Amino acid sequence: MKKILHNISLYLSLLKIALKEILIYRVDCLVGIFSQLMVQLVSLIFIIIVFQNTESLAGWSFEQIILLYGITRIPIGIAGYCFDSLYDIGPKYIRNGEFDKILLRPVHPLISIIGSSDDFTSVGDVLIGMGITIYMLIKLSIPITAILIFKIIFFSIIGTLIIGAIDTIFSISSFWTYRSNEVIWAFYRMYTFAEYPINIYNKFIKILITIILPFAFVAYYPTMDYLGMNHFMIYLSPFIATILWVIAVKVWNIALKHYRSTGS
Image 1 (tube, rainbow, N blue to C red):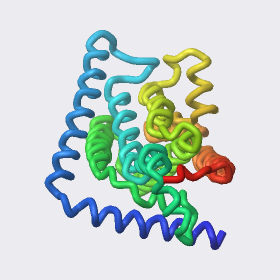
Image 2 (tube, one colour):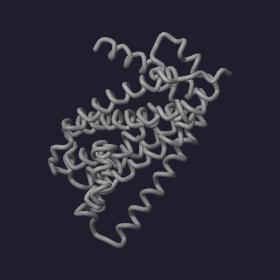
Image 3 (spheres, rainbow, N blue to C red):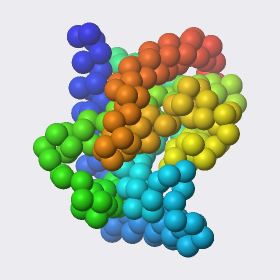
Image 4 (cartoon, rainbow, N blue to C red):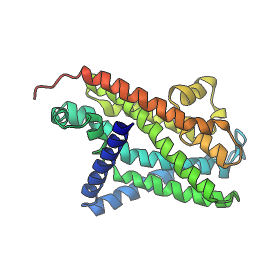
């Protein structure tokens, strides 16, 4: 446990240093955040178009769907900032030989890599997610209590860890293909299934986003709880995150043993 806490502390320190480097170019950061906001605006317009042809979706009203969307954007944005560098393992580190330098550091290479994440534009996701969440909670007349705020913060962090673990697991492909970005992105984009009530999907999709790639635990089940549906699955989220990270670290260490330097 002491070693785990040390690694977490080291990771946060590296992330803090990376953030300071990013903020040197503040105009670029602001432009990136604005661009991200525009991307999410398009997604919201799509939801609005869908509800022009129906009053509900699997029993969920327009306001409830928008709340789910807002809740989803918070962990997605945090994960984008905290784990973005996983996409660079293949093309940036292994293919160019930079990974050999990381191996010389007195810290696990996974900590070094995720600690260098620099996708500050994902803050746009967090901001729009928080804005939509607060607005829709008021719109739905849901009391914003201290307990609710704690739940949203806690389960957003848990959701972030679930996304980060899934990305970490699939990043091991870079040790053989050197193209971790395409592989991670292919599986990561499946989180979009969890932006809508899972009852609209067939059995295969439900199993996929609940058991195989448990994106439903990122925001769907938490949102059900916030809406007063009291779904017990929300309380499985911390266990899901823990199990995924145990798997992620183990498979990453196995892949690391098979690493062969590029020789460059």
